[in-house]
Length: 290
Image (spheres, rainbow, N blue to C red):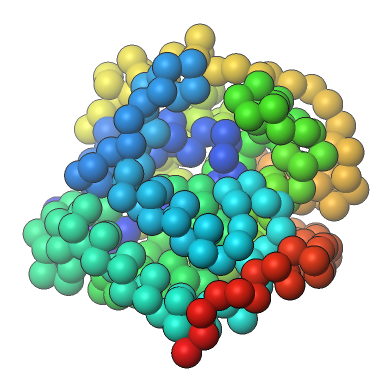
């Protein structure tokens, strides 16, 4: 493995219930390094595991509580918070957690790291600084799933209303896309992962340094892992929101054809997302400033 492959990090971004866990496990079987402290699998939810760091999840939950938001609020965090003293403290804390979970910083002799936690979509300005603090080359894989399927999964698990689920889906996808335009990135879908994982891995390999992961390394284990019976909520339904429909189409086209998405569509949707709820934004102004 070359030096640059060992100094890389692959960030998996996607809305909750979008197949990010399965995607992360597949890529780890191709050689990407998982965190040391994995969040436990939950029967009936993610039976085979989430493949993400428990300390990062726990830190994010505490951070959201301090900010005044929740996992699926569907409203952006006040942009001013990212320049606050609280954000600077969070940055330092998360750099320490990442180094502990993946084995060190610039001089660490570990493989390509793979980091996945859906809450990162809403925290990307912070996480850009965290990842820069690792000294590693960053690439991003966006995981897209039909918003109607995500909504059905959240309704079953959390009793979440469809309108709220679609709003949260839109926020996660739009914010993640906008924060990664200058990085090597690719878009894939949950359908593609289940039907043709080799293409998904090939796209990840294309945006990473040569040798960071290897498609042939885990082929047998991947075939055994991707069980069609574990997929739930194959839903055919129209999106209730025009903005959600536009982003769904743009993101799915990018995943289908392996191209960049329609940025004009994303920019139009961002106006809706970023100006969606002044009340929520005002509620977040209790954070600590420098």
